[in-house]
Length: 184
Image 1 (cartoon, rainbow, N blue to C red):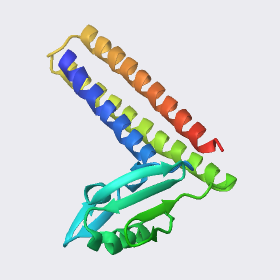
Image 2: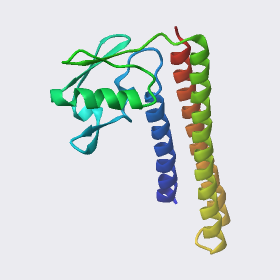
Image 3: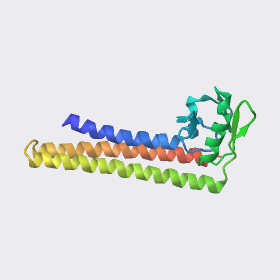
Image 4: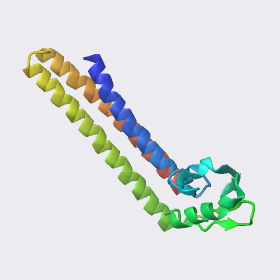
């Protein structure tokens, strides 16, 4: 029973990890290299993450500097950023590419906060679906006689406690990211 619970708890933790990774790619006014995580550069015909073609640094609170190891990649990196949904125009000085993040407007902050809440709610739904799947498995085991009725209710209680704990963590992540976005 315990190993079955562990499987579902791991699935819930994975959902939370995906949410936190998503939150990392949402820019909150400060320069965060993780906003570039999903951007791929055409590196000699192979789509390659920006982090693997050069050095990324954050010299100021609202600037990221990308220094490709191969200067021939400057144009490819610049093009990849321009065609992404980042909404920032890169400046290329022949050696490095600079991304200057403008201050977010109040309206944009509110939109981002809504997006964060929506992603969080989606993760809560995923966690609840995992709980439902676990309860279905426990009911089938009880019906087939592999576990007793007491084990069934014990399993349902434990999976509910795990679910409640995950929902609390998701709410805390939503609150933290929203606060980060709304801070001017």
